[in-house]
Each structure stands twice: as structure tokens, then as C-alpha cells.
Image 1 (tube, helix red, strand yellow):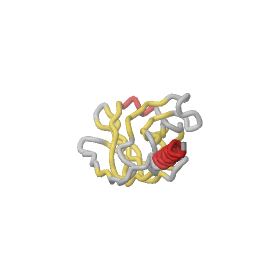
Image 2: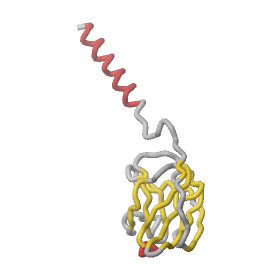
Image 3: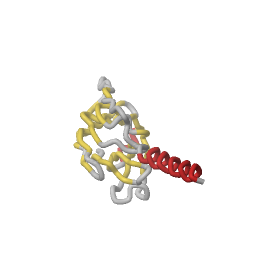
Image 4: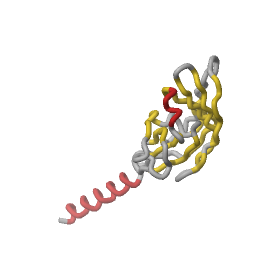
Length: 144
């Protein structure tokens, strides 16, 4: 009987330690350095990122290149989190209900990188770093 209780206690300790060490954070933060070739493009706007639920800094530079808009994140930095994506949206108060377009996973929490989208996305008001797990904006910038 004593062995049974010892096994249960050891299993419980193992479970607590295992679950408490699970984290959404990355062990090593990689700084992204993806350069957008501005040849043949025109700069439409430059905006600063604004913090929402987490500190978010950097610039958003929007270019027009042919039938595309290029959303360039420059000197970008935010906190790490689970399932961070980049969304274009019309309302910060109702991001999902107000209409949005998912541009994809956030490429990195620090550095320079960009997203391409059809020129029709100029109708969106904001670009948001969105955490899908918690339905919260980490930070945003105004679009065009």
C-alpha cells in the first residue's frame, strides 16, 4: 500500500512539474532581417505601432507595388505569445465582428519583415498583431 501511495505522489509531482514548465515562450528569440526591395514601388504611408495588451513598437511602412500593397514592419518588437497572427481589420473594438483579413503568422517578435496583400486591402483601417488563443491585440498601427 505504501508503494502505491508513493507512486501516486511521484506521478502527481511529475505532472505538476511537467505542466508548470510548459510555456508559450520561445527559448531563443531570433531577430528577423527580411528586406523588401522598394524598386518600382511607391511609399503610401508610415505609421508607428501602438501598444495594446503588450508593449509593441516599431514602424509600419506601406508601399504600393503594382496590384499589391506591401506592409513592411521596420524595427518591430513585441512580446512573445501563442499563435500570433497579422490581421487587417476595420475596428479595434470589435476586431473579429468588424471584419478582418488574416495576412498570416507573425514572422517574428523582433526585426524587419513584410507582408504582401492585394491593393484592395487599402479599405482596412488597421493592421493588428492578434493573439488567436486569447482574442487580444498585442499592438496595432493605422493603415492608409
